[in-house]
Image (cartoon, rainbow, N blue to C red; front, side, top):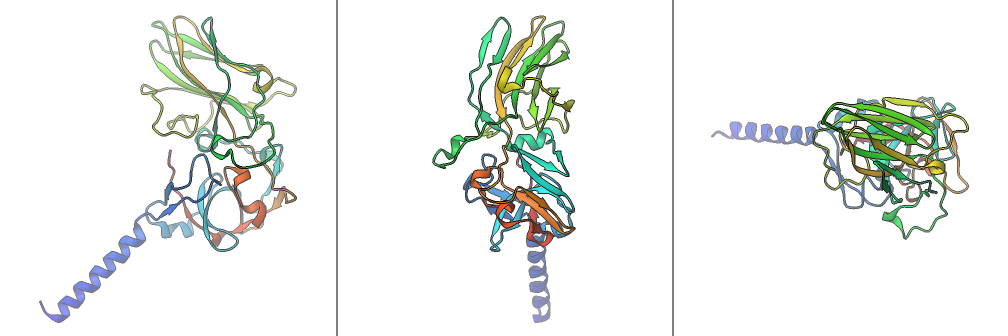
Length: 314
């Protein structure tokens, strides 16, 4: 091989290596509890392929991004506010331009926590009695903080229909929802009070076994949107006051049920609860508010501080 050909081959190899580095996903190791329970210390988060293209990508609400913190270090946070919005934290909810933002089932699945509450069985019905749910966390018992009551919670269940079809009856507080189930199928359903609304969705799932190593109460294959999403009626008792229940008639049964609660946003002590974002700013927050240093302390971050979008892990 001539020297010229050898040099050309070496250059091509270097170019190929550079292209592969630019195309392959980048990986980051999680340090700390700011994105718990979905991401725990030691977890590895990957970007998508061609991470350099993220510079031209428009971040969307509730996406997880690798962000430059105020001191320039890389951290992972969730996009909560978009350019030109007025973003506010109030009573545990996230508001944009005065309206509470509703999470879709997939977003809820990344932030929902299992709630250890009594589940009672009897007379063809499974129910969760009224209970005061606090924003504590089993993964952070050593964190010393005052606890607040959480209003947004619900149930996730697997139900099966009888041989001639059944109806599944769900109660979320004083609200009632009924689904008709085709004969012999198993269905998953999610229902609850979420972001000031009554939400619910049900779908046929022939493989309704729980996913491995799930840190959320919600299944991985939930639909993209809610079937029911209506404002919570003023004065109606919610799940914390009146509980939740599921029953299936005509030979059907409730195979499994669990309770979930939503993320409970809270401001940091003596810091802002409202931010007016300019045309190049994003508000980024952690999923575990009391364990996260984020835009509540730094303020909004400019677009160039959002490095890479993290690929979904669900």
